[in-house]
Structures are given as structure tokens and as C-alpha cells.
Length: 281
Image 1 (cartoon, rainbow, N blue to C red):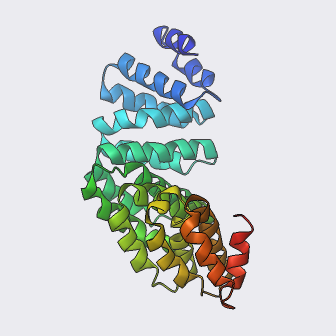
Image 2 (cartoon, rainbow, N blue to C red; image 1 turned 90 degrees about the vertical axis):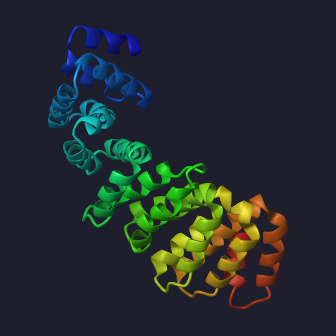
Image 3 (cartoon, rainbow, N blue to C red; image 1 turned 45 degrees about the vertical axis):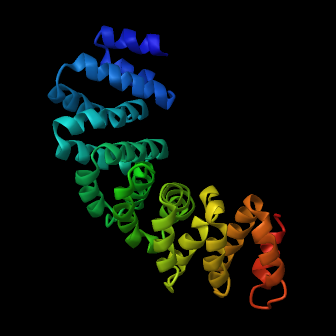
């Protein structure tokens, strides 16, 4: 594939290059983007090629455009973000996912200006755009950049109540649980503990599901403090999230979760959650 990419670029056959990338692996599309940036000679030329690819609208062209966005951003951040917003909301889910990953790359490398943009994006009418904010926050979390913890948690806070399934599925278990609890266990837990006082079911669902991710095992006893409280909620979505978190946490630290669930079996308010969780342990 890379030899084909090199031949297309060497001959200036950019239209056929985009077609050749339909269904290509992400690493090959990124390679093509890097080679195309080198061949273009200037940021202005890269931006023009990216606009042309977005206008083309075919899958390969859109994926290539998404990989060119970071180079466009260095030349003209506003123009790049307009193009990225178009890709994030595309009808093709593979294009949307790749564009969301690009958001994460940009946030990692341009934290402060991108954070300002994502604060605006999180109120967008499109769930795909709001989901991209969540994905980007997770990709920007780094354990060696502690100063990012609170800005990222505050970026996500209003989205905890988002009722769209696409946003919710990536927020609680992935971005909040896997990324932020993984990189910033102390401060992320403090925020999750605060959010657990909400009465809003989507917020509580995200709180519970954060403890379903692997990093929760390192703070298992503290996680139980929150899950114990949420297990008393009588709403089905919250109770199912608690059950899911308990069995996943239980597989990683059974020595603290299984005794807790056995106690719940003796509590008529929690027995249903305990039985559901124990089926998987």
C-alpha cells in the first residue's frame, strides 16, 4: 500500500490517491497524509488540498482530509477547525471516529486553544460533535501532565447529563473511567464523588460506569463507597450501571467486591443488584 501511495504522490495523482485509500488502514492513511504534506510545500497548499478532499466527499478522501487537519491547523487554526467540524458530523461513522481521534491529537498538542474550541463544541446540537469532545478529552489525558486534570474534568462535567447513547457510551466507561481515573486517580475520584450527589440518572450512570474500567481496581475500596450509595437508587438505568460496575470491578479485585456483594444479598434494597452482579463472578 505504501508503495502505491508513493507512486500516486510522485505523479501528482491526488484524486486517484484518495480513491486508493477507500477502506485503507488508519496507519496507511496517516502515512499518505504525511507524504502529501511533504509534497505540498506550504501550509496554504495543504489547506487547499484538504478543502478539495472534503468537497470530494468520498470515504478515502474524507479520511485523508482528517489526517491532514493537524497540518492545516498549524497554518490556519480557524479554517482547520471548520473543516474538522464538518468531518466530525459526517454521515459515515468511520469518518466521524477518525475525526474525533484527530480532535484528540490537536488537544494533546494545542491544549489551551483547543480547549476553548471544545467548550463551544460541547453545546453543539449534533451528538457526533459532543461525542468528539468526549473522545478528545480522553486522548489528551496524560499522567505526566497533572495540570490538565481539572480542565478536562470541567470540560466533561456538563456532558455527564447528555442523554444521547453515543455520547454516554464513550463518556463514563472510557473517557472518565479508563482515561481520567487512569491518569489522575486522586483528583478524578474527587470529581466523581461530587457528581455522585446528583439526582440525574444519566449523571449517575456515568459515575457508576467509570468504576467498570480497569483503573478502578486501584481504588477499589473507594469505588465501593460510591457504588454502595448508588445501589440504593431505584431507577433501572442506575441500578444496571452499578451491577455492571460491580461485576467488572469484582473480576479485578474479588477479595473486596465479593464480600460486599454477599452482604448486599442480605439487604432487600440491594439484593437485585447483587444477584445481577454475582451471575458474572
